[in-house]
Image 1 (spheres, rainbow, N blue to C red):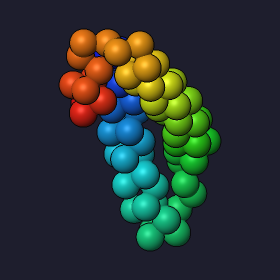
Image 2 (image 1 turned 180 degrees about the vertical axis):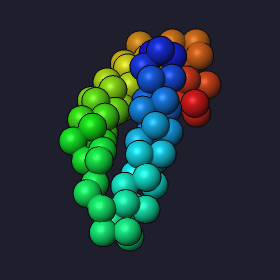
Image 3 (image 1 turned 45 degrees about the horizontal axis):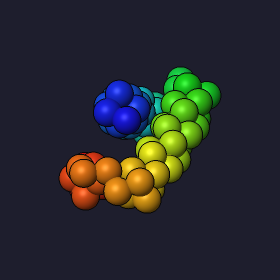
Image 4 (image 1 turned 180 degrees about the horizontal axis):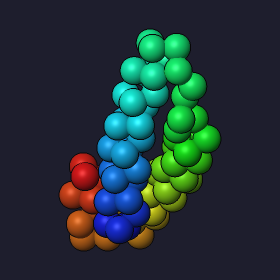
Length: 73
């Protein structure tokens, strides 16, 4: 779970940088350079987030001793 959470965070931070770069390019009437890459990264993050929510739900249902702590993170 932690590895997926870390990957989601990295994907989101990297995507923010690329979106900022493309915003600047758009303001300068230049082509957006990261459109496909951003879309792919967001899709991957979405899949990982879904898996994380399912894992948290499973931990809660199985009464994992750290379920509340996991859910907070």
